[in-house]
Image (cartoon, rainbow, N blue to C red; front, side):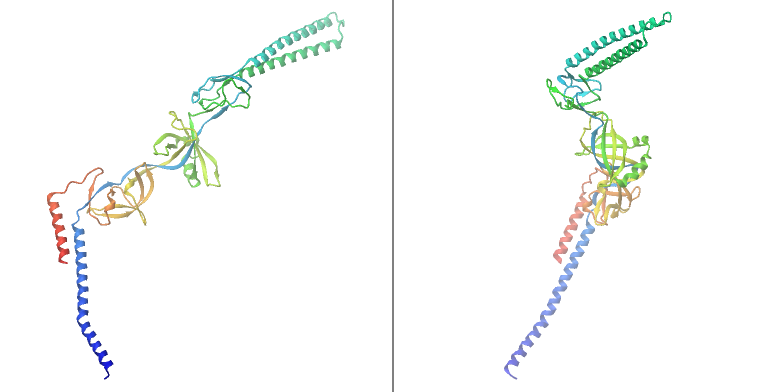
Length: 422
C-alpha cells in the first residue's frame, strides 16, 4: 500500500471515531432545548391561568325609540333680501337708521330733498285750477246757447256754433282730468322723497353718505330679513323616496319633519325648525336634490351665508337596540363588540350598526339582543376567552386583598423557580 492511501485511511478512521462521540451529544443538546421550550410554554400557560380577572366597564344593550336622521351640509339664506334704491333723484338729506339696526316695514329710513318735486306739485295744482275755470266757462257758454235754441222754437244759434261749444267743453274737461293725473303723479314723486323700508329686516352697511346727490340707480342700504330664516341643503337622490314617503307630498306633513341646525365647530344644536319645500328636480350633475327648511330664528342664532350641519328627522324606530358607541370596535371583518358570557368571560361578537343615537350611542341592527352585556371600557386588555371583572360605568375596581397579593407573589416565585430549573 502506498503512503497516500495509508494517510487517507487514517483520516477516515479519525472522522468515524469523532462522529461516534459528537452526534449523540448534539442530539442530547437538542432534546434539552426542546424540554426547556416545553417548560417555558408550560410556565406561560400557568401564568395565563394565574392572571387575575381584567376589570372592565360593562353596559347592557337597551331598547328605546330612536329617531332616524339624514345629515347634510346646509347654507343659511335670508327669507327676503332687499337692496333699497331711491325712486327719485336728488340730494340725500337724512338717514334715519344705524348700520346693523333692525328696521320695521313702513319706517322712513332716508329722506331726499323734496323742494324740486314740491314745486312741480304746486304748479300742477295751479294749472288744475286754471283749467277748471276754463271748463266752467265753456260749460256756461254751452248752456246759454242751448237755452236760446229752446225758446219759442226759433233758431237763434246755428248748429255749428253749438257743436263748437260742445267740443270746447269736452277739451276743457279732458284738460282738467290730465291736470288731476299730473297732481297725483307729483304726489307719488313727492312721497318717494321719503324712502320707506319695504320689509322687516336688518340694515347692512350704508352705501351712500348724507349730502350726496343720488340717482335711481344708486343703492342706499341692503335690508335682510332674519326672522324667520331659511336653511338650504342637498341630499343624495337615494334618500328622495324616504323623505317623500315621510311627507306624503302634503304641506302640513312637510312642516312636521323636524330639522336641526348644528354648529360646524362643536356640533351643538343651534336652532330647530321644520322642512318647508322639496325642490321639484334632481341635479343630474351631482345626483342630489335640494331642500329648504324654515327656522323662526327668534334669538338670531343663524346668520345669512353661514354654513351649518343639518339633521333632518325622517322617522322614528320604535324599540331600537342601543349600546354606547365606544363598545363598537372596528376589525378586519367589520364591526364587533366584546360580549360578556355567563361565566364572566368575553367573546368577539360581530355586529351591524344602523344609525347614530345622539353623540354617544349607536343603534345595533344585527348581532345583539336586548339585555346582552357589552364591554365599553378596557377592551385593549382583552382577547377572546379573557376572564373579566365587570364594573358599572364610573365604578372603580376594589383594591386587592392581602390574600390575593400573597397568591400573586407565590405565583411569581413559582414561575421564577421553574425558569431557573429549566
